[in-house]
Amino acid sequence: MTMVSMMPPQVRIRRQTASGRIALALFVLAVIGLAAMPWWAKTGTIRMVLELCCYVAVAQMWNMLAGYAGLVSVGQQAFMGASGYALFVLAQTFGVNPFLAVFLSLLVPLVLAVPCYLLLHRLDGPYFAIGTWVVAEVFRLVASNLPLVNAGAGMSLSVMKDYSAFQRNIAMSLFCALLVLVSIGGSYWFLRSRFGLALIAMRDNPVAAASQGVNVRRLRFMIYVAAAVGCGLVGAVYFMAQLRINPPSAFDPMWSNIAIFIVMVGGIASIEGVLIGTLIYFIADRWFGEYGASYFVVLGVMTVLVALYARTGIWGMIAARWDAPWFPIRRHLVLERDKP
Image (cartoon, rainbow, N blue to C red; front, side):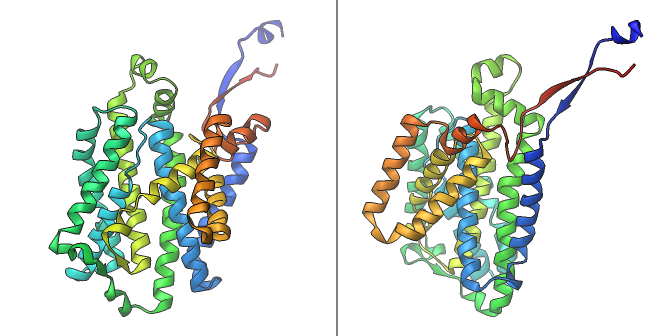
């Protein structure tokens, strides 16, 4: 008995929590509910939910960039517009099935993100942010003068008339589920992987992470390209639902403003914060959007106040009081002694 009691305790790693299991079950049910919307929701509701899912996805892509990789971008609309235009060209000009064209259009932001990052990665801080905005404006100017995309007149997706309203609702519902699954589920899976550990270490201290063997440059490149493709998926789905695209709407900087507001208010570097911030913005937009400029001023002031006095956002304040993460990514060491 004495020898057994003196044996060193065994250690196991606990990665999941009770709140995380509940949230995971709710997440799965939510994805299933989104995919099944044609059988329980009207067309107007589906379009509204699609817009909400686009906000979630764009905000989470920006959250991965700024909250973890330290890359503050105000030009992610460049990849949304590029992918949206690629969808219209493939479907309207070359006759590709529009639902298939959504996925083929992702090759455009994937290819464009590489030279863009090679051009911008030497910049730091506000210079990087300004550089991303300049790139987005260049994309807008190119689209405004490119005959292939009908220049500044824009394009319409008239091929969608070949599909019934129910078929379009099914497609939009499946894309809603895909957006949430890729942005939230994919980010959660990535953050729980060994790359996620490296990303969190890089977020806390890039120099220290590099000294421990983390390839900071490669990881930032991976996040930048992944965020570009994610935003491209949002752009393709959103403009397919809108049935029309033109340069001002395709490369609208308001998308970056929305993402920044959602992440800053909800809580940067947290998936939970993105969900909370999206709900706040979506409800505020529905209730107060008719007030125009005054409404945007209020949102801007709210973002500044949160940045000054509550830098961890609403979720940060909740997490400081209750340790019940919805998407736990931390690893806890649990000591277990052998039973005699």
